[in-house]
Length: 276
Length: 276
DNA sequence: GCGAGCTGTGAAAAGGCTGTGAACAGGCGC
DNA sequence: GCGCCTGTTCACAGCCTTTTCACAGCTCGC
Image (cartoon, rainbow over all chains, first blue to last red; front, side, top):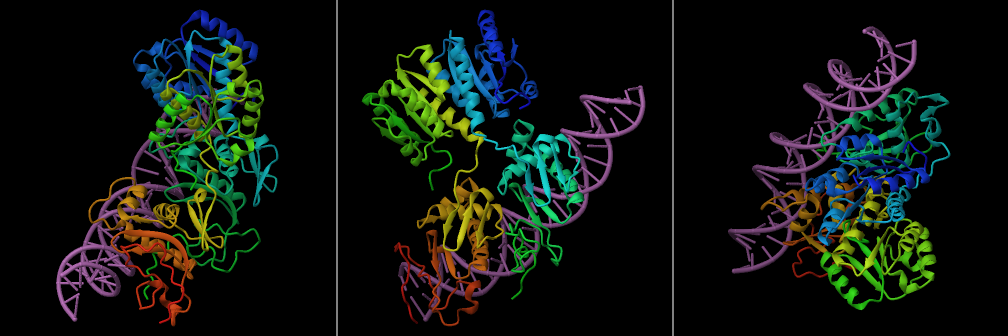
């Protein structure tokens, strides 16, 4: 994500020096950012490298190769994983692909084909994420400017940190849709969420705090209990007597909420036992 | 409606009858929806098929294969394209991959590997875009939006909880069919129902309550005594005499709209005119 | 018509999820 | 080094959801 749109960030786990030398020359000619690693790298470090793709000879890891493949693929669902190894059986290839590899190439192999396959894997990932950025996004009083990594209300900056802004951007881009925590985490942090991680909640709270401070009469982030969060600018119903805020999806764009009981009774009609 | 989440919709463009026969058997065993096409299909028709993946032997199309590959990939960025053909050179494979193919397999090839590679292609595509899959479902006044985990009547949210929504979705997806409690439980809760569990009944009641509140003139969930439940939007018989406050309980007076006890199934319990 | 079994209904108990404040750790500039 | 900023982790409180229970009404077989 940090590099230019067309560039590929790649790590290579292999030890075939001749193969590596040829590949390296071509990677450089193509302007790819690559790093060659001789042994298995802890998945955590792979996370930190913010890669697009991983080219790996699983035979280096012996029998641990399968587990490694599975862990890396599970932890980095967005990473393109291409296995390039010598002398594999159909069963091995099927197993590797099912464990999460995106492609499996037999060695020896022409470097141009290796690159074309890596490109195909990365392209597949990228084109399914057509972010139509460019113009600033506006919702309610809020203006999100991707080019500045910042959001504004009446030209006053919210003072968002990087993570806060990325979270806001992910939520706002899916305008109106509910996004589950796992997906939010995946898209903001770049890797799979550990079970029990509350980071998303904490950042939602920080975001809400800053949003409320500069735009108190609007509500932007809605909680969907047991599911995730949804972004949609809604005017806050200030006159509502009680228990008004949940996920009512009012059609409200006008100044005042519709008196047709839009926001009133929706989420938890059970608490107030209605005797009758 | 289109297909279950895990299923793959696939078109095969090939003419190798032996290969096709073997593949077909495996596709069916795996529950994939597939269609075999002998010649090149206009890309427009491919669009209409709402496919996940396309398996194609480009040699069928001769020199037009390249152009076809490019057009299909360009027109359907979400489609996984796997080429499976005999006797290709490195240059051809590179060209095909660069034109938009996601994978290129040499023929002859083990069907299991073909499937694993198709799966890998589709999996990669799904991970990065799990949304925008299902359009909203409409029945009567009700609109079920999967992307919001919510249902609406006249753009007003029912305020369904997660379980309530999932129950509604399971019922609505089987439009018109009666589903047994065991199956409902299995599909919503994900595991087998314990004997004597009343959870499904309780949630049906909650669902009915919320449906009736916002859409009182329709009935959506019908009980089939001794069997299960059936979803179908039906207008409530308005000719009932004192129908003002009946909504709370479908319990009945003699003229209730749903002739329930039908273990003998009468697919259409609609009553044209029952005057008391 | 009667009884057994099934379903509807209301409410309370149990469990899980989210909001919240604050402490802790790492990075960066001064 | 020191202080500030950012991001992460933790514990607790509160609320919502789900489950469970008891009872009443309804169907169906006899």
